[in-house]
Image (cartoon, rainbow, N blue to C red; front, side, top):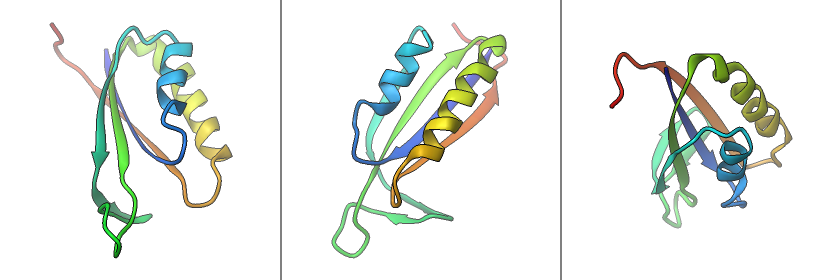
Length: 96
């Protein structure tokens, strides 16, 4: 099992849920209006640092990670300037 974490900062609120549903991940959790800073800049939801992000989590069988990861990578490459999609994959020892 793997934990897929997707951080999306963009205009289309259905983009990531639609991808997760299309790849039949089975379930996911969304945390809305996340703020932070990284290599692509700050997102704090303020006038000085506008914008925020959505964070999605899903537990996925290890054999499905490559397919889902490729779809997310392809989508990230198509985003317009200023929008971001980052993905992290972490091993899961136990999930119940």
